[in-house]
Image: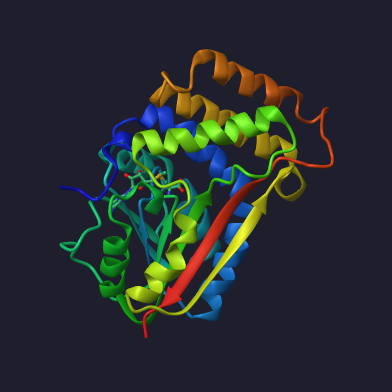
Length: 264
Ligand SMILES: C[S@@+](CC[C@H](N)C(=O)[O-])C[C@H]1O[C@@H](n2cnc3c(N)ncnc32)[C@H](O)[C@@H]1O
């Protein structure tokens, strides 16, 4: 049985808008962080696990043209679209499951962006990644972290609560970020470190920020219409439309974690 949550496979028309909005909103700080990591560590080969439509990794490949990228995903439709959308000499896409049978190895860097939250067995993935890195190689996991405790108003609280419920309903991990440092350590990685990024109108701009929220509302209601009813979806979309004018001291915020470790 595959390690990937089947609920997110084969639904390209639902996920596309969300993956694009996430790349637009979060990539500015992610690209800078990863570019520095790549240059500082003289990385020449990267494997991106769970690349989706390749939106994020193609941008990174363009910023680091001397690095060779292999980007894989278990979803055939996403990979076929990735090939159509992003063509670059240093980037190849493959429709393959990353599991113990995965043939290539000796990578300098393995990245997984918003992919681990949808894996059934995260320690197993981290152990597989360990075996596919060269000695001194780096595993870098970027994840979403759903915080329901901080909310400046009842609609934002509702959005976060329903988001959390959505993740539980489909069998994905809304707070895997908190477990990742220990998982990396347990699987033999050293120099483990993790940061949480604040993604808010102040850090990424309110247009990109609320476009991400809109895309989440649309995605959640397409996948779980019983929980994310049409009324709830519309309530969140209306909230996003008014959010700029209604801004208070307690702005809305999402958290993204970046967790990394090195193979000794
Ligand atoms: C939420 S998407 C993220 C896409 C992309 N990384 C991005 O940031 O836009 C997660 C993807 O990971 C893929 N995935 C998860 N585990 C995988 C594995 N073990 N092997 C291959 N693909 C995997 C899923 O098929 C899904 O398309």
